[in-house]
Length: 482
Image (cartoon, rainbow, N blue to C red; front, side, top):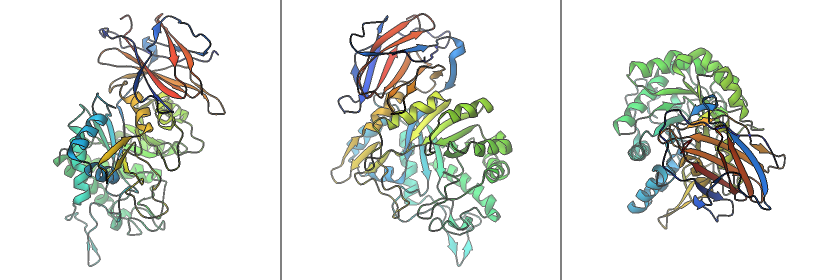
């Protein structure tokens, strides 16, 4: 079988790393979990009776694409509560597994600003104060509360582990009194911002950022609304039009952050790929404050090439995939986490965060209601009663990227990936690590049989090896010429 090619590049001037080629694999059958595997060898090798697949990597300057800023997942109130239920030694071990190079090496975390669907009842914000019907216009009663303080503490602890962790904050709803319907949840009627409180809305972000930073959890970027086109009754949401979002950023939120001396970035959109005109509109109205766009995976059909089209129109704007849920109760495919990481990377995304990091064994805690995410399963599930945790398959699939494509790595252009109509196929993406020039080639084999893969580099190198059936394999290759 001969199919298209994949491309890869090493930054000129890097000193060749004295490493041997290696391979690691996580498989759908659970046999392998970030396990060492037969390393690729130089040359074409001997495929024997195995099916074959050919990739080509471009290790010249023309192949250089986006810089990776990190991989990770979402920290919700459910995550905080179940992690804090673990015994101290277990909790410390888990955080080290997640956040250091000994484990997944996650370098990006998205967190929920106050309540989300993965919060216990009741829904809340950081300023729910009204007194005799009078709203807290001065935000004098702004308070993180127990749940917000616990969130900030966990993020601060995470920030102390990996160097350069990126934290993004996203609100599901502002305080109810700032909205036309005056409630956080319960109705979709007038589920919009009351622009009489536009300045208070902006200052709400300022106070949140200052409060988290004071607790050691500096926030690097925000989106002004999770899923601004998703107006739901039984979970916190708020509808924001595209031009409205751009004007709020340009006239209120951007200036408020700048005047407060905050260097927090504002990312546009934070919703599905089927409405690329939304972030384009935001950029046209507030481009000076918006260096990046955030996408979710829930469009049907899902087409990650939208990111490439968007990049071609806005080449200076970074892109991120910030949400895609996984589930054990309504099982997502074994390769789901790998696919929603692979696709964005192939199409100019600089980072990927899954939904969600941690839940209990009942996919909670979550809000009561049919609209709540009651089938969303964390990459980590915690048995609160037993004080133990389990790293699910989705964790291992994401770690096949995050552990080996380190922050600062450069993704390379190329071809070679292909998925058939029945879902089988082979997808791949490659990057060069900035620190040692090593190259990571991640290969997602969606066939039920082993595939013998040959990788030809434009520099003249050839590597080959066996890729296990229904698995994600990462080849770690030495720097060019090493």
